[in-house]
Amino acid sequence: MKKAAGASSLGVGLPFSKKTWDWAGVHDWAPLRYYIAALDTMGATFMDHDRRKFLRTTLSAAAGAASLPATQLQQASASLLVDPAPRFDISPHLYMQFMEPLGTTDSSLEAAWDYDKDDWRSDFIALSRDLAPGMVRYGGNYSHYYKWREGVGPVASRPRMRNYDWGGWETHRVGTHEFVDYCRRVQAEPLYCVNFLSDGRKNLWATKEGNRSGDAREAADWVSYCNDPDHRERRANGARDPLGVKIWQLGNETSYGTERFTVEQAIGHTIDFAKAMRQRDPSLKLIGWGDLGRGRDEKLWAWDMLDRAGEHLDYIAIHMMGQRPIRKDTVLRGSRYQAAPEQAWDELLEMTKRIETRVRSIEEAVAAKKPTCHIAITEGHLSLAPHNANAILLEWMTGVFHARSMNIYQRHGAKVKISTCADFCGSRWTVNALLMQVPAGVSYLTPAGCVMRLFGRHNGTTGVDLAAVPDGLDVAASRTGNRVWLHVANTNYRGSVEASLGVKGMTVKGGRVWEIAPPSLRAMVTQDEPEVFKPREAALPGDARWRFPAGSVSAVELDCA
Image 1: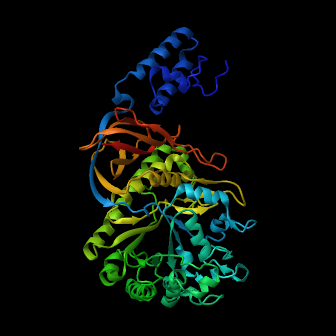
Image 2: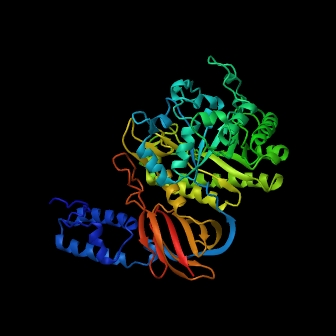
Image 3: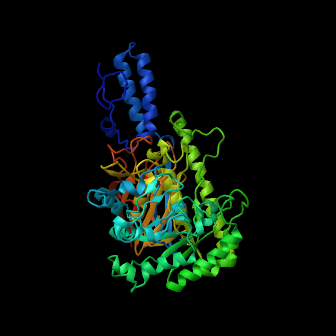
């Protein structure tokens, strides 16, 4: 007998689809998949013995499963209780994106530019607006050899530039004006990373193409070009009004490797750059480098940087790179995870513990050396082999990892003011938040991008605490007036968590839930299914109870009195 579409292979010719089971009041299907699988085996064994008896037994067992105690089908209902006392302001830059030209490695910026229209791709702009990043950073290792003057003026006269890290040549079609214009279109604040004497990489001081480093004077001239109301060159290039770039980063991954500056050298240059740039615009906000030394001195640079240059800095930066597997028998290499998805799930959640440890370590340095300074995580992504291109990053398997990462940053939002969990745009790297078909087509968000869009769009302005959180849920909370927001990740691979939602001293009158809960945690986003992780919106029931499906990520709005 032919099995109906979407049916379980029970062998009895009945389509056990989700609709069939709804009569029993069962709405959480993950725990029952394994029950149905067991019935499949039973059916194969007993079908020839007594077809009708098996059918009656199966239906009875299904109805019984629907009435089993909650502890057997899902975790018991518990209270998710918010303490609404305001703790800190949530930064609008908490869900920033990072843009870097990546040469032949990933078409990145070149893929985002429509050369026929001589403008940004319309699908790229539309999806960027939907993502609403709040801030976009331009730079990365590319800043080590970027000469900003090569990216302004008439396009035809802009020289091409060799991409020393990522291969190939850059056209400079996207320069200062084009990047700031993009940020304005998507309502994001621009952040530039300056050429910080190539971070000490002496090989870039004398290349075949000349000296590619940039000194403090060059950085200060860039500030004047962007922000001086009467700057002649900028006005001649078509921008009468200032571009208003107010946040700048000094150095990119300066501590990574022995070929770059020592911490003492970096501190001296940070002071020089800060003085020169602030002389042109005293209102600037500057980010200094403070991450771990790699290859020589393994300590956190933030201690010395803030101790000796802290008066010149508003932020101290680290990059949340190196998020690599902990276990020696890891399945998070290549496609091994496909044979052991539940182990992959556990490994991903284990890795998030290191993120919180690193955030706490830099918080300690800030508290000890300059309490008014803030933390900027200006790069960060899940680094898995093959390098930045593992397919698991397109599956919802990684959705909860990214949700938990962003929840950590928000819970530490008193100090963390700039953060991200992905690179931004490209055509090949799966660590991007936004992927594009090339040379044309659709743009779509990866799970990392979907989480940042969900949380960024549905969030309060003030961080608050949680008085009670059910086991299995990872939550960050915020509020704006009488509206309370919850960012919820169910960390269970199997099993939903039902929770009663409440706010201390307030009455929950209603609310809404935006939920990403695909039928399978192995669901994958592709150019053919770009909306597979589109959130489902629903009204919160009158009793303010909600069942969070296994592996789901949700944003909850509570309307309180």
